[in-house]
Amino acid sequence: MADGMRTGRSRPETAVRVATRVVAYAAPEPREGERALAVEMPVNLVYGSVPYAVMMATPADLEDFAYGFSLTEGIVASADEIRGAAVERGEGGLRLLVDLAPGRLREHLARKRAISGRTGCGVCGIEDLAALPRAETRDASTAVSVRPEAIARALSDLGDAQALGRETRAVHAAAWAGLDGSLVAVREDVGRHNALDKLIGALIRAGTDPAEGFLVITSRCSFEMVEKAAHFGASVLVAISAPTSLAIDRARLHRMTLCAIARADSFTVFCGDERLGAWVA
Image 1 (cartoon, rainbow, N blue to C red):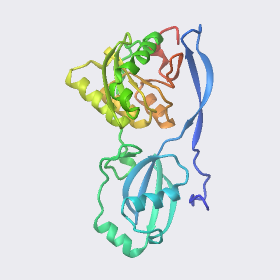
Image 2 (tube, one colour):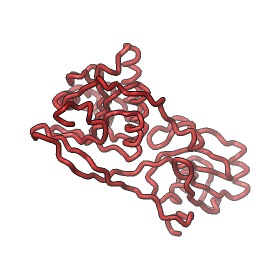
Image 3 (tube, rainbow, N blue to C red):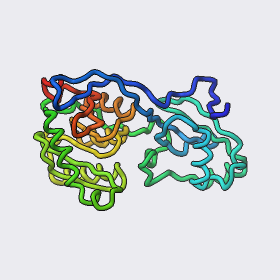
């Protein structure tokens, strides 16, 4: 098949539609709606039956991905060192099976290494789908209550708090806000994961109680961002951009409140609206 899906099954969806509740600050009640979300899926790259890395990706053009990844990682020097690529479903994701020419496969296995330092679209240092990170499932605090006006305040103040962002227009920010929406701490970084890691590091060094506020991130919300928030113990996560399908799944798993597409006039509740006050629920 031209798209490299050689499993004999229908190709995975690249977008899903989910029911939502859109909260407008000036409206008397939420508006029911539906939104398309990009699918995020773990893809296990396997060479000669040996797992190499798990990357988070949209499940489209995976044969192209196999070739490009293999070249840029230095596994091959040219396309003719790959005899083919096929996709099969694995436990919790997809397996991308890359068939290397015999000589290249021997060289690859001889110098096989784990990936490190790549957080933009993959999962650092793991090789198998079963090892996909998941924070310990715990009951997020049901005592946390965040009013819509608190989210509006945090969003309004966040722009002025992003010093590096104002200067460069090229970084992400992560913020911790009190339950009233006042900003307590903000961290910035060129990587969205790094910004959140920096913030969480500052919070745990200060002994911050996760029940005393909520997280705000300026980036899209992928599953890794939810997992990081869950590791900290946050009950409420607000993202300026949209979440992925797996992010919502993980937020539900951790019983977190996930709000996204947060703007000056509204935000969208994807799960956990019980923490947003009786007005929303």
